[in-house]
Amino acid sequence: MTIVEHNFFPEAQKRFHGVAVVQKKSAVGDARVCFQVTEEFGGYVVRLVTDSITILDAIDQSRFAPPPPWLAFEDYNPAWWGGAMQGAQAYYNDHYFSPFFRCLDNEQKKAYCARFGASTEWVETLAQ
Image (tube, rainbow, N blue to C red; front, side, top):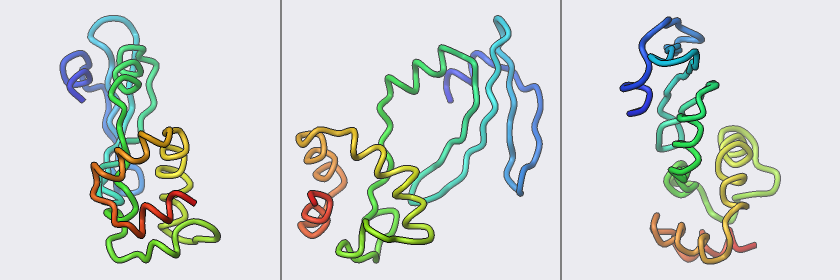
């Protein structure tokens, strides 16, 4: 967002399903960025479309991590995670958590679980 605020100027803003979608144009060149920010699953979800290499490089280098399921769904039983989930938990797992977590090696998974205070039950569930 710092890159966008300092290097892009507003071009348009519209509402899409009740959420503001912002389009900005680069102060230098023709790069554009469209994005919306919503609060979901215990964090912020940024949906972004851009042709700006600067923004894409910054995202790649930042190594964002989604909030873990025990924070996104505080009272969810770890034994129920995975498999044939439905609803918000399935959407979250399929689109955010699982693609992220599968890319981690074992040490990174341990560090992630420690960083976010995973219970023994959650660690065991995710190790399966």
